Length: 69
Picture 1: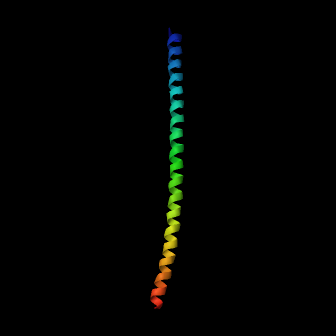
Picture 2: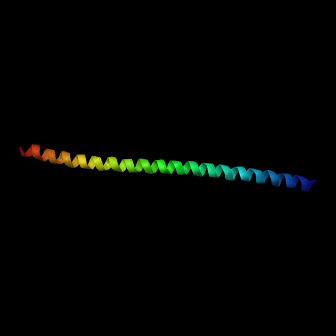
């Protein structure tokens, strides 16, 4: 009887491990998607930063021209 319970328990544990492995794969896919979205956001933030730096340079140039007049 103990052997029967032990076999059943091992079967249940193996089944749970299979479910856990499947969910881990799902989470991995989800995390990869999130990472890609963060990369896109990071690239956009860098583009915005570049634009802000360019605008700041232009503003500094305009301020210099205004002060010179």
